[in-house]
Length: 439
Image (tube, rainbow, N blue to C red; front, side):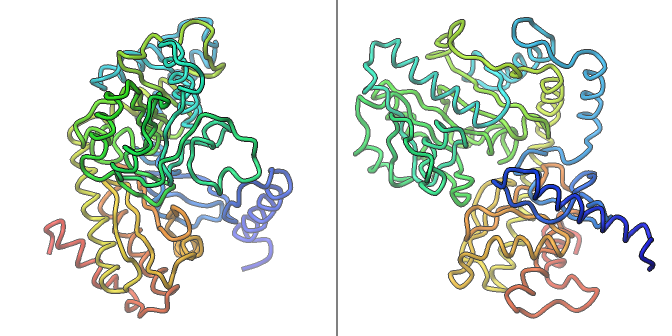
């Protein structure tokens, strides 16, 4: 291949763009040295034409994969009409979305739209404090409890709510009014710390950044009961778990409870930035005129796409598909655990799965993620010791099998295990065929 070939030019362009990214971006991220160029379903291609199976979905954002035709149609149709007005005026898409999302959520009466999960949680924190104020509680009685291992955002307030010091270091002084329960899933720890000074508990049904750690059965019900006992709000952070990710529209539904507040983002927009805070009857009217706002919140383009995303995901057929793909994913990872000895636990729910690395590979999750990328599959991490899998809800059996086969080969090469024979996907393929009844 000559120096002037198209492939060489694309490689040079990739290197040029990566260099410019390093030059012009604030260095708070460390992107892989590639340029993703296009996507279709659960597959993306870089600028040089290499394909990757996307098992991260933009950190659970692209719930319907890439280039979903219904989302594309909604985007184009609204983009031809009106892009932005601010909340000084009504537009139709956010009204339609508000109606649909409240009707799909048994506890909710009202919704507030914003641009991200952090903003949704920020709104929830303000609402909780305003709710307590309206009850006549002094400022010292407006504390909010969160849990060690949680993650609620990167604004100064939500990073304070995030009970992980590594995210807070260097940003002190932090806002006051948060109390951290040292043990997630520990009722006694919550009971010891609960008091009249706490006006709300903010909790994830599955701690994502905390290692894909699900709430144990009954824990959310316990939190619901203790919040009722103390007159506090139960606020569920479903930014990562919501909109079908776990096999129900919202993860807290598995526990049969109703929160007072729920926050959403990520998959709600199908790839476009949108966040939402849903509020039940206790606090639905707390945020009155002038108390909170967002210039871009409820943007008509974002809301049109979000409505299409919500409508398409919120079906029994889609939820059944999530459950079926989840079985394939967890069984394949369990097989790797048994054969390679690389994991100590596979946990999660639906298509939100974490594989905890064996002790000898602790600290290597990032390196394994990079090895997987080089093998043609994109996987995430949840801390230094957990591989995180968040594929599109619409991923096909074939895409999932190919992605996991590539991941296994990268894993085997990384840990020095025996590689499958050339051209043979080995036992993993047979595991898939057995699960789906094809052999």
